[in-house]
Image (cartoon, rainbow, N blue to C red; front, side, top):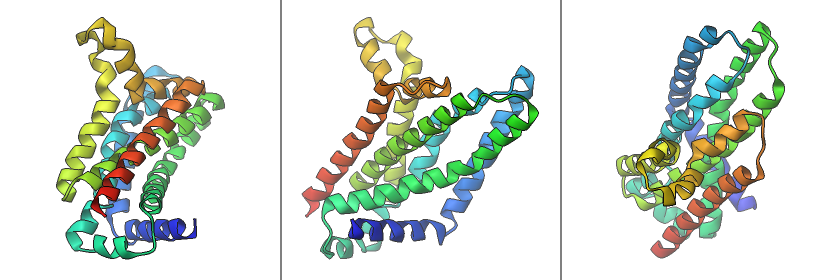
Length: 234
């Protein structure tokens, strides 16, 4: 655990000692604020559902941008060989980098609490859907982080890692929008694979155990694939 946390601190320092986290954070916060408040006053209701409805797509764009450097950049800079020779297992490397990416995503999501405070000041805001929505947002961030880390492990450059991660995350976020075009037999399976569908239950204030299992399974699936990919390189 000590080695994993040391690697996590190293990766967090790499994010916040460079402009990348701050630039991505400002763009994310500005975009979500503009989109949310542009329609908020039209409905005349003190709720955060409009904000949460944006997150599956916006986080699908945010997390790949943060994830692309984690392993692909190490290979390009030649530092991956150094990490590989350290007394770290591939499980520890995957866990350390994933935790750093997930925590960075949560850090960038935290300023959006200002939206809840602002909405609460304007009317009677039900705290249940807000708390459940942010729990779902944390799980959603973790799922996309795991997918992005896998893409960075597979790719040989940051550009390819970004494109692959975007494809995976956007498919997970948008796949339920194409259900009407699919055969009836596969609709339940495709619907279950959608991050947006599972996240929507949290935005209603419902913490569904099936959705919890889904998000944890997505994280575990991509982390196992990442670990397997790195083991093959040893």
